[in-house]
Length: 332
Image 1 (cartoon, one colour):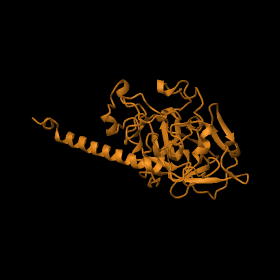
Image 2: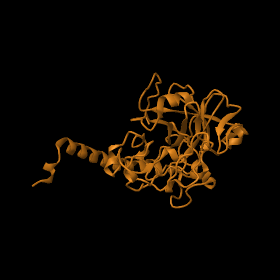
Image 3: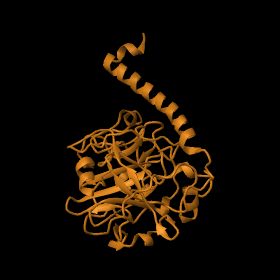
Image 4: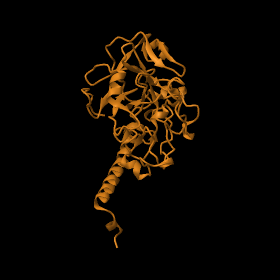
């Protein structure tokens, strides 16, 4: 007797569809590796240091933290969340912009690989380079959108919030109502449909997740892009967390050094520089450090300069949808 006859037709179609998508994702994963992990002219320096870049919407307007929270604020009970992506530090290098409601992402006291609970709001300062809005108890963070396994990018790599368990992750054992390693985390995961790599955004810059039913094929966290705001609440990117500074695109020696300030020059080789802005460089920026909220001069951020002057760049935040009058839909 054919065992397939015991499977209900809708379930059979869903499984075959999912398997087909997974196979397609595997193929695309290979293409992504060629496109992103082996850039043409990878050893050619693009700029001397990380760019200071203002984040804009598709119409060229600076975006604010309140708009990001309104557009993409996700909580434990969120069933879906728009994808927000901008290119940084170079063109064609997608970065996720994620807002998490009801949580304050702080520097963990223990390694995330062994599990840890985020520090309650008000107990510790937010993790360096993450924006924290105390009025709404929301953390805004940015991490590379290039999977650290074989270079897959959005939408194959995507953030799935607390009440949204992607079909592909269910195939490896995740359940919304599961317990232990089978439970989909409260705030969800950044999950790669190509090969099943998993990253926990609540862990900030150390986000590689191996606490689920299947180990993550990636062996390195998604690099955290550092964020700051100006007096108008506009958002800027100004570098990469040195604890996981290497974006997969720029690894000259994938089996060698994988993080730290010593590889900064490798991070800016190959690719195309993002566009320069015609706006005036802010005189000061507000950034969270591991101790407090600080007002700092952009020159103290060690950003790219020309003839002693800081160059202000710009990058466009796009989404897979429009929402609440914010027309941010674009391609990535």
